[in-house]
Image (cartoon, rainbow, N blue to C red; front, side, top):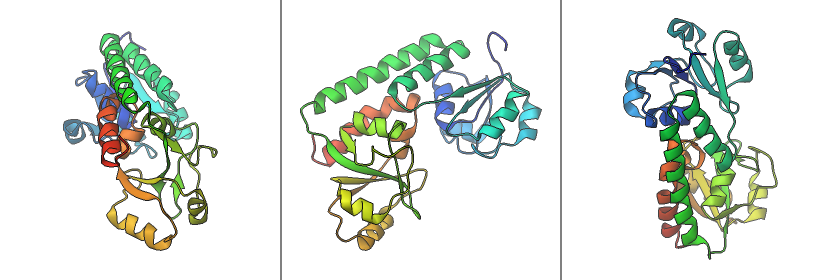
Length: 255
């Protein structure tokens, strides 16, 4: 790889946003159709397919000298095929420590280490101040839904589980691994204080809250629509986490 990559493709929406924050407007030449932030890049950058179905022909035309992928977001077979032809950096982020390390690595790869380190410090300081605010509050229990038909939640070893902890909540399904399917019976048995319905990957709306209430009238949990990007996007999006968490716990009368 060249000392400084000048033709970068990002296959990860949250890391595309990070590359923009690091000032790599000219270097990033390709993104996925799910890389919606920043909108200007979404509007103007070449799309190389989705996170799961990559357009190899388009990538070949772009001839990148760095592709940034993610173990969870992208398909192993597709990434292995790309590795035969191009330098590919694969990230794997399941907690805050790994998120900070990922930002640092991207900074090194793109010669933006100073900006990357400053970003990490900003995120850490913001989250530290927020956690001081809630330090004396007893954690509330929560189920975080990411899908319906079937209902799916998050278990341990996920970035979302980590962010729930940071926000002051205890995941009632933390004993499960990754992204398990759950039944309404399991949910009723757990009776968490809150059920968070995420805006992504499934776009939950108010109608889905009513639907869940009708399906499970014995649920006593308060159901809340939450911003999935805040809970699942590692990278510069974390700059907004503390403010969002503060607003959330305030609206829930926890703070």
